[in-house]
Image (cartoon, rainbow, N blue to C red; front, side):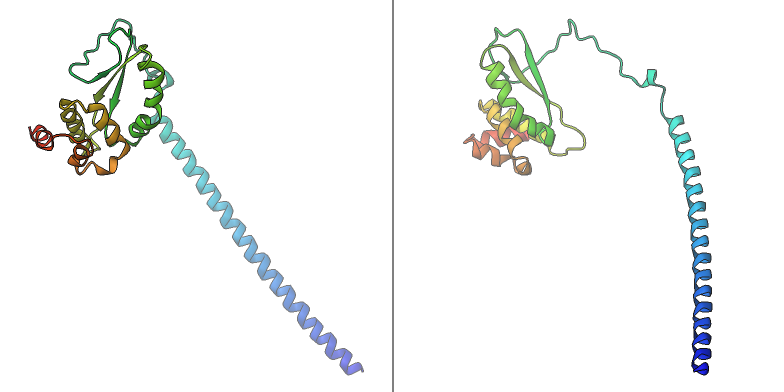
Length: 194
């Protein structure tokens, strides 16, 4: 029995020694991990301070950055030969600056314009016109604007305007819109070419 006890004590001692060595290794690994974490955190703080410093040098003071108010009183604006909806007796005219590839313009024409038409234009409170403002990043917008005015020559400006805004994915084939509106295709394509 004593022999078994000695063997058990020996095994238990070796087990405790291994646990103690393992714990020391784990504690040492944990200390090393925490030291690395603290070092990385300090480096990140320094980088953040540097970024903040750079940004503060790039940002203008609030007084220079604020937009200057525009005085719109007594400004005259020529709408030229742009199409106009509404009664000439209406004292106000709303100008839509648009781009036929602009998704926000499309959403406006689909969702907001019908309300403006119903609540203001049809009640003779407002006149409404569209002025083309194709953006340089939209390569099809300028030709689409020309197509709208070519359709306008056949008294279908508003119809093609609505159709192009509703189906912007067909801007590669402007004749698609002309065919959809039963325009004289030959006249439409001659207009686009010139």
